[in-house]
Amino acid sequence: MRGRVRILNCDICGRQIHGKPNRVVIEGARMMACESCARLGKPYEEPRGLPPTKPGATAKPMPIVVPRPAPTRLADGRAPREVRELDIADNYPQIIQKGRRKHDLTQEELAMKVKEHLSIIQKIELGKMAPDIRLAKALEHVLRVKLLVPTSEPPLPKPSTTPTKEITLADVARIRKKEEKDAHDLEAKPT
Image (cartoon, rainbow, N blue to C red):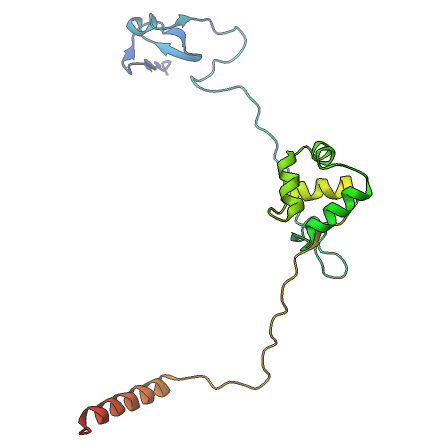
């Protein structure tokens, strides 16, 4: 069996390369080029002992992705605190003002401690703006107050225990027939 002849095409123009291919680097990409396209890049030599790489292939290892475990429920059926939905307390302006005064801080000092603009702290204390979750956590930490509360949902109405009669197609037909009859009677009634 004779050795196979490998036909190479130019990575730039696509024509068949006759003879030894020219290895060039064009804009950081390693390519095999024909004689006419080789002048477009800088020549390079493939290191000895390493298998030649395909053009455009990178030698970066693939990152290992570790799946996160699903959040578990606590013994009483609630989700862990970091999973539960949190909401800002309704009286957040008073809580923040009271905590700031307790720690003898000015609005400027509080703004610096939570890494926020003074105008944001002023708007929050006036109740014109609610802090986002990140800022609320920072304020809780600095002022030692409780701003985030679990989201309260109204209780769902309990389903009635009396069985409801389901409407069948026959019921719909009777209703339509009655409506048509009533409409016809109204049209025929002299005024």
